[in-house]
Amino acid sequence: MIYGIPVKNNQSRSYHQNMQNEENNVVPQQKKPSSRGTFDKFVIAPEQNGRRVFTFFIIILSLFSTFSAAYFACFGFPSDSRFFFISFYAMEGMFAIDIILCFFTQYVDDEDNKPIRDLKKIALKYLKTGFPLDALATVPFPLILQSKFDEGTEEDIEKLNLLFLLKLVRFRKMMSLFETKNF
Image 1 (spheres, rainbow, N blue to C red):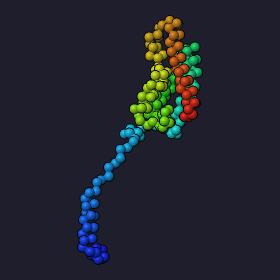
Image 2 (image 1 turned 45 degrees about the horizontal axis):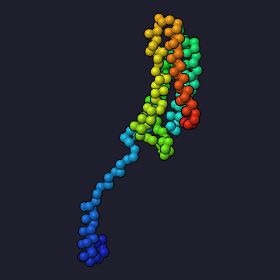
Image 3 (image 1 turned 30 degrees about the vertical axis):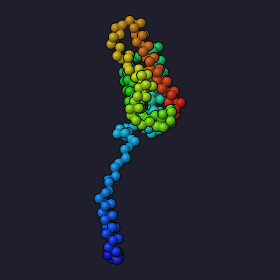
Image 4 (image 1 turned 90 degrees about the horizontal axis):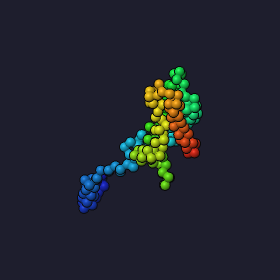
C-alpha cells in the first residue's frame, strides 16, 4: 500500500526502484557559459544618459577648444592670466577622460550591425581609428616645450604657438559625433 492506495507488489517495487534510480542519477545543472565577459559591467553604452551628457559636454568643449586654439596660434597664449592657464588645462584633462571612456564605450559593428561589448575589440578598434588623433590633440606640447623656448626668439615662440593648431583635430571628432547622433 502506497499512500493508502493498494498496489500490487510488482508495481510498487518497480515504481520505488525507478524513483531511487532517478534520484541517484540526477546530474546537477551546470551553468551555461555566459556570452558576457568578466569585465562586461565596465562597458558603457553610448546611449546611456551619463555618457550622452558627457559627450554633449565634450562637444561644447571641442567648439571652445577649436576656436581658442586658432586664437592662441595667431596671438599667443596669454601668459599673465592664471585663469586661462587653469581653465585651458582643465579642459585638456576632460579630453583625457574622454579618451579613457572611449576605451570602454561599445560600438556597433559595421558588418552585422550588432553592438560589440568585448573590451579587447573596443580597445583595438579605438586604437586603430580615433586614438592617435585624440592623443595628439590632448598632449600639451606648448606646456612641455615652453621651458625650452622661455628665452627664445620671437620666431621660436611663434613656432611654439603653431602647436596649438594640433587641437583643431578635435573638430573631426565633433563632426563625427554630430553624424552619429550619439549625444
